[in-house]
Figure 1 (cartoon, rainbow, N blue to C red):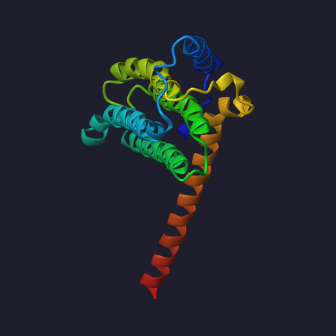
Figure 2 (figure 1 turned 90 degrees about the vertical axis):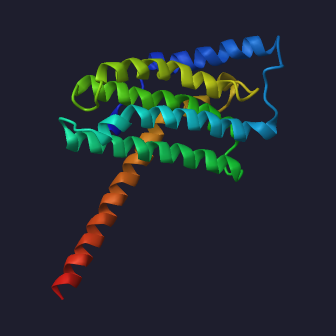
Length: 202
């Protein structure tokens, strides 16, 4: 499974350092802060950009002949499930279950983690995705650009949040949730398959 990677500390450090830099500039210029009503809409747009890039990176490998089809399909399924979990997090912000600050702070690390998984997986297995050298380069860029997009959605600062330490590990927490969801789906599939075989034999 590709969910057992951990995001390196230099990536986490970059996200926190950029947040501090943004907050320093924000004290001088408050014109960049979005109104609360547009935060949700802009978060959906930022997630749409992230999802579009992630899907485009795997699209050719899904449609064309690939040397390692089983691993490629497993990787694509895991990345799509991970994106689904991030979308569920944004939906929870819409219902008010999770605050916009916590969602956007978490997505900074989660978006970096998503593309780190791409980078790490294609580095270990060159036949995983077509054009893996271009995919790796794109992932390196996205690892540091997309968290910046989420950073500018809020006026609050990550490093002054009382939950900052928890939010730094939100990407690993999402990996654990994703792993549980994967095993639950596999168990459900096994139960359905067993019931189907028994009904067919009866």
